[in-house]
Length: 471
Image (cartoon, rainbow, N blue to C red; front, side):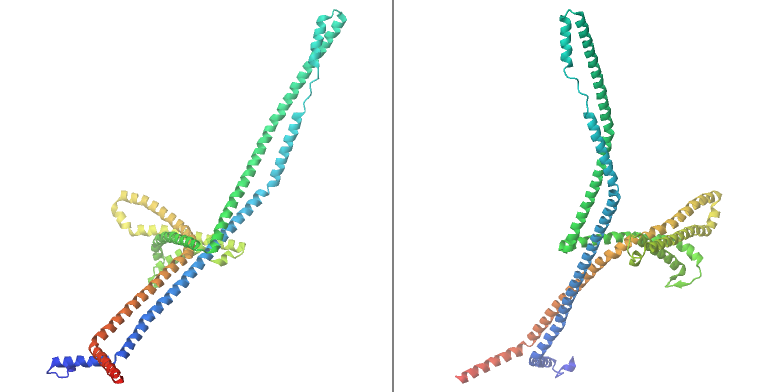
């Protein structure tokens, strides 16, 4: 500091003179220094604002891209559901309408039989007219006449009339009995018609249910096709829900894969115990990990060949025979891996028993028997677990596809959030830098306030003198 003094023996005076010199210099250089501060302000704050605007535009483009992807995915799902419903309708109509002619023929035959029986029931033998009055008149004549011939004739007529009436009554009873038999035979026909009509009603009901589902899917398809904000929010909520659900399943699958890895890691270390390492891990552990990954990949091939998933599009576009070949080959290799893991599970228990043989020998005979029974249960459990886990891991293909599809939206949302956060930070930093530079400028003006004021007074006095001379 003393090197800056003009007079080292008089530091106070030197400091005063130094301040006056710096004030005078800064007052003279006030305009270029202000321009330098303005340039610094524009370069830093303006640059940060442009970065924030660029980040906002990038976030908006990403949001628009996410919106288009959600709409395309929603429209694709709606189309697939409609296609499945139409295929279901086609299969249902092909199945049920193929039986409709036979059902219609049965109904026509049943109705014709009922009409015939109804006509037969309507045919009745009419009663002879006037017999009751004639019999009554003959009875009166028989009581009043005295001629034996006439009485005998009238008696015969009366007898014939009574016999005819009995025959008519008997015939009427027989006819009525036939009618009742015909009517009783119509009951099964009515039941058959009722059953057939019930089948028709069920078919019509299933058709109406399918139609209602199609209408619902069409309404949803039209709503998604409009692309309004409500549809976007619904699709985003659905994607978030699928992402959370599939993430939970993937975590559970990862735990299952870890259990499977621990099950086969020990026997693999005995089978491949050469001390070599690959990518920083023992070859045996790497081999066990490769086996688990191959099982997952085989599950992907199986699910794609069955048409349940579409992770590998080339499999879905293959011919049916080729897909069937891939399916059978994948099932065969997965079965081999399951059997191999079951045998590795048995080998693991054998290795464990070999390591603890000394402790079992020291435990005594009874402990050895108990240990042997427990060992059989453990061997069986590990063998079953080793055989079942590969098949369970093969089912990971379904949640894996859902996770891949839904994670795009989730990661894009996270990236948009990070870009918006970066833009907000840039704007905040630009705001702080702008005000800091303004504060520095004000402090600079405050430092040179004395020469500034003197210059301002001198300038005003000069203007007054010039104005007085002009008068």
